[in-house]
Image (cartoon, rainbow, N blue to C red; front, side, top):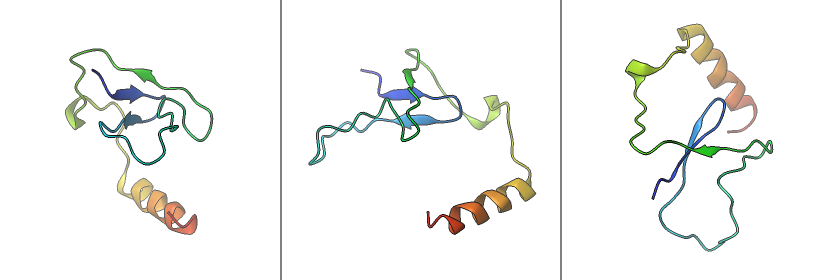
Length: 70
């Protein structure tokens, strides 16, 4: 069974165990975007990544996350 879902800008690994709430749909994120299962044998690694953040972008990303309380 494939538990990895692809979204436009991220992947979600669905858990293999069930938590106390069984109604969580990992295929839809909080923005309402729908993920699709990746193909069998799919592998993500940094070497095949097409987009890399600059150090400045990483700092700004972290700053924004801290401002949101993440």
